[in-house]
Structure formats: structure tokens, C-alpha cells
Amino acid sequence: MGKVRAGSLYTNEETLPSIQWKSQKRVAMGKRSVLVQDGSFATPINDGTLPPESRTARFQLLSPELAIPGSPRPAWVHLSGTGDQGYGMRRDVGALLLQQGVSSIVLESAYYGTRRPKRQTAGKLRRVSDMLSLGNATIEETLLMLRWLRAAGFWPLGICGFSMGGVNAVLAAACCREFPVGVVTLCAPYSAVPVYLEGALARACDWRALQRDLGPASSTSTPGAISSYAARRAAEERMAQILTVTDLRRVPPPPVPAATILLQADDDAYVPTDSPEVLAGAWATAEKPEIRRVNGGHVWAFLAQRRAFAQAIIDASDSLSGRFAQPPLSHVQTRPSWPDRLTANRLHN
Figure (tube, rainbow, N blue to C red):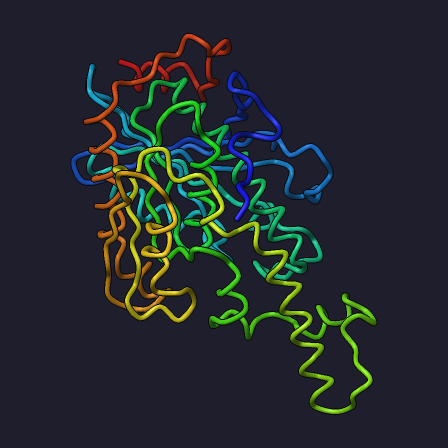
């Protein structure tokens, strides 16, 4: 298989997002006081592939209000799974991480939540191309968020995600060659192809609409059931061809395999349960990612295995901090924007 890009298509290593900070609140969590801050910035995707409603990236930053001088300040970017609108589900994982002093950026995906196009119903994407545009935007916006976190003094850094969020986490990590990052996925397939052609989501696709899009090429002179079967097969083959770009076996392996942990549910009906083993076998690295098994099915794993997910993130952070010193910031020309001077002082002091 041919390789795909390894780097941003829209920005360079010196590009930082110009963040507009909105609401900020302090929340007591156990013995800790934490900050929850909403921010937004212009997506770097400027080629017209995103609808107007999706062109402003939005996120929440969850961080301890006070940082211990000289101590690591780990932070992870949390990417959304299919149909995951808003911040709530991922913020619950972030709350577990905050108890261990790990900050989180919960990124709202294009096409979801406040970024949903007007003609779209909830989180149901209308076109296959929308899925690809969503993934492209997620990768590029994640790279900007990682650079911002690094410039703001957070370290070590990582990307995590459930299901589709895990796929995009691996893709974003493959594009981040500026500094090492950890990767943790939960129930992420090795490719979207088996998910939409073989898994439970195959029943959610409007195959008739896809057949119509193919036009005469999907029709046959044979009437009846054979004609219908041939048209469906043609639509499936076209879908598989398009979704090949999501095949994680085609991308470079994660930057730090020892800080990469792949969690998979044993009874997952949506993604192939051997996805972690498939990826570990495809990535030609001396060190292999760690594979952890959890009980339950696809959705249940995220609802019931959040502590296992959070623990994997903490373990990956520890692996990174044990292997790498914080990279220098000599090439960063622009200081990161903070919501206010008080917050910046508290986070830096």
C-alpha cells in the first residue's frame, strides 16, 4: 500500500491558532480547583471543503487552576467519535484525568454540535465526502492545538479518541513530526472500510442514494434481484475505494510506539475486534504499541470503561515523560493567547 501525507497541508511549524476565549469558570473537583474555558479559532481549512457553519473550530480546555513549579504539565487532545456532539462524554474522561493533574482539550468536530450544517440532521452526515472533510479538519485542528499546548508550556502531549476519534488520533499523530506525542485509542478500527461495509453501521448507510450517485455504471440489463445485488455491490466497491484513505496501515506508525496504547472491546459489533493486532502487525517498528482488552461492546465500552481509558492516557503520558525531555521552543515566534493574564500566571507559576 502507498503511504499518505506526514505533515500539515495548510500550516507550518510556526503557525499557532489565534484563539478567541469566551466563557471561563472554576469548578471544585475533589481537592482540586479546575478551570473550564471555552475557546474558538478559525479552522486552517481554507480550500472551501468545509461548510460555513464548520469553519470556526471550538473546544474546551480543562486544566488544574494551580500548577506545581517544575512539575510536568501533561495535556491531551480528545477527538470525537461518530455522532459525538458537544463535549459531555469526553469531558467525563477529562474529569478523571484532572484528578491526576492531566489537562485536556476537548475539540468539537466539524459537522457536529455548533459546527453542524443547517441541512444536516443531528450528527448524521449527509455525504461520504463530509466524512472525509471532517477527518481532514480534525487532523489539521489537532495539530494546531498541539502546537498551542506546547507553546503554552504543557508537556508531555498526546491525542486520544474513541472509535472514529481514535482513527483521527492516529492520523493526526502520523502528521505530527515536530515533537513526540502519545496516542491512546478505544475501539478504533484499522480502517473505516469494514465498519461501513461489514459492521453494524452498514445498515445505517443509504445505499440506494449511493447507487443513484453512481448512475448508469451501477445498473445492469439483468432484471430483478440480480440487478439490485449488482447495484449494491457497485456502491460498496465505490465506498471501499473512497474510504481507503482511512486505512491506518497506510500511514506512518505513531511517533512513539511505546507511548501508544490501543484498547479494544471484546464484543464490539461495529469495528473488527482484531484491529489492534492488525495495526501492530502493519507498523514496522522495533517497539510495538501496547494492546489492552476491555469488556463489553462498542458503545458500552466507552460508557463503562472510561477509567480504563483514562488510565491508559496516564500511562502513555508517563512513558513519554520518562523517555523525552520537554522539547525546546526556539522556533516558536508567537506567544500563545490566553483567556486572561490571571489564568496565564496561575498556570505558569
